[in-house]
Length: 436
Image (cartoon, rainbow, N blue to C red; front, side):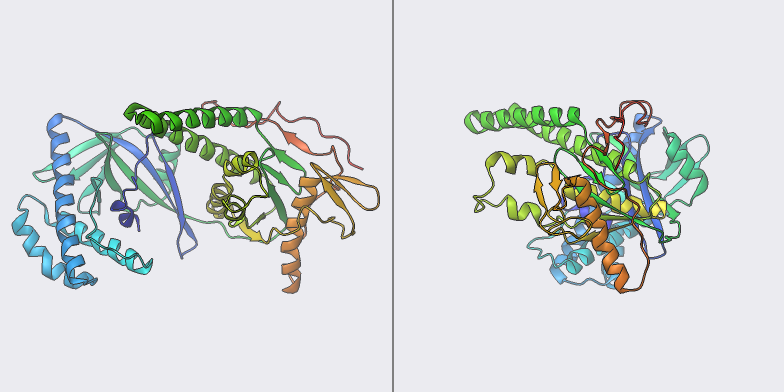
């Protein structure tokens, strides 16, 4: 599937020293991928590796034109009709490079067909990249790897980090991917990690919000005023640059705008990872979220005049989908699971089942006079929606929670950033009030 994104102009590398991608396989295992920078021993080796990627790209485009013209998505027929022709057209290319290009083209067009993508022109490989196999590479000692090029094998080195070394020593390595990004070579190494067995014990509900990023049914609230302040600054700078680029059509303004967008995206991703790690510290193995996939579509629509411009702006900044995706792919590695429920009326109902309650701001005024924290009460209702489904199937799924009285939240006011040395919340938690 990774080859499919090549012609969609989605870069597989990043600007950081490493990136992590996780997907689940049918064998109850996770595939974790890390990107690390490759260093050649000489300029000659650099040119050889570059020429190999360039030849692979030319072969890729040649076979792609054949598949688009004939509409023949059959791996054997693609090989029979193109292998010997490519060997004649590109005599410097090793045979295995031709085979890998053929397999990549086949995967791309098969993915496009399964996703019902209507192609109006042949796909092209816009990024220099090649998926290796055991005939094209071999890992050596002392953080080195040998690679096959158009002339001879070369040896490259890479600088690993602790997590990569740990996975490399414990788990098997899948076929890596070599790609070029900003005139540098990167290698994407995948590890197949068996996922722990999921055991149902209890569940917690998580209510996602704008100022309070997440509130759990266990009484944990996560927020970060510094992050919100930085986001406001970024969005103000973006508005100024967008106005200037429309008026003056400045190339430097567009360049700075792209940089700000990338910075904002990275900040959102960094925050979502810390949120997920903090939520996973619970002993419960089931995390229940609201299905907010249609929330922005309904509220940010231009025809929706009930929402003000400022409220739409605040809502658009929250990465609900990113938080859910990160929680979902990290959960199996910890023996946990993430499920979603219908979000309707989770904030307007009393978790005890009493009627005629009313929410005002961050408080929920119950009909019997009790005052609850509204987000905490909503998180318990989210968990209860999941337990009701489990009770139908005669599965006991308890919810660990205490009464959500107003003022009893365990509020963490600031999450650490990635440039800090340790991941610890000591000293940041405000003392929670006694409950009931």
